[in-house]
Image 1 (tube, helix red, strand yellow):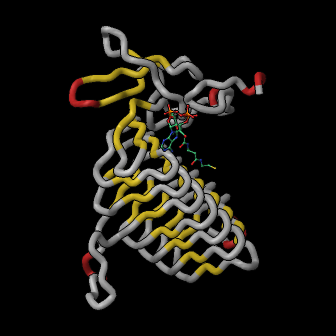
Image 2 (spheres, protein in one colour):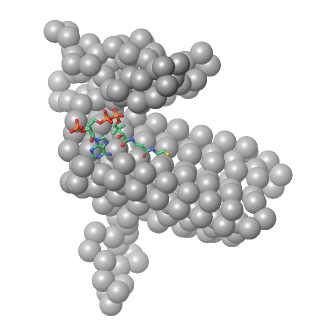
Length: 222
Ligand SMILES: CC(C)(COP(=O)(O)OP(=O)(O)OC[C@H]1O[C@@H](n2cnc3c(N)ncnc32)[C@H](O)[C@@H]1OP(=O)(O)O)[C@@H](O)C(=O)NCCC(=O)NCCS
């Protein structure tokens, strides 16, 4: 792949060797270290740091002031809000070298981390989960779960469109008010979308937002 397949702002620093996919944009003052792996069509905003060994999938959006440390694995379509924090050592001490003990944190496809939220390392955040702004995640998060507060607690389910799902009906079905997609809440707190393969991209007509929040405020009424 040629270097021109992706964009690096002149103030950013990309150490080689590393892998950066086609269409990816790396903006002001960001730093990608050697041995990092970044997929296609990603956007790294201002002052983003990607350490060696970090793996980032396709279409990942990283907002300003985010540091991704060794041990972090980010799947496709993840959104990282501004100044959110992902850690890699649970019990850091300046005097104790734990470089061989970095813990793994996995963000599954489509997960959102809100602005200023913190994820304590060694956890897995499930597909399309949603971490509210300022939350502190201390354990594994189920797919589609909405996590709020410090420590983060689950406050319901969020659709793939980032809209809060209503209470399930008697069959465990929850319909997304924005997309109309049906989600089924099964045993063991597992949610799955019934109408679309979760690993497929959204169809174009479903990929443009129409509501602003889980409070379902229509754009037109603002
Ligand atoms: C969690 C979230 C999706 C809820 O959105 P919402 O539906 O508009 O929520 P509401 O404003 O109706 O708030 C519902 C309640 O949750 C509380 N709340 C909302 N967000 C919260 C948060 N991040 N942490 C703690 N409590 C929160 C509200 O205070 C309100 O409480 P109340 O009922 O006691 O008044 C949203 O607040 C959030 O954190 N989004 C992330 C934004 C972000 O980081 N964007 C980054 C891109 S710039």
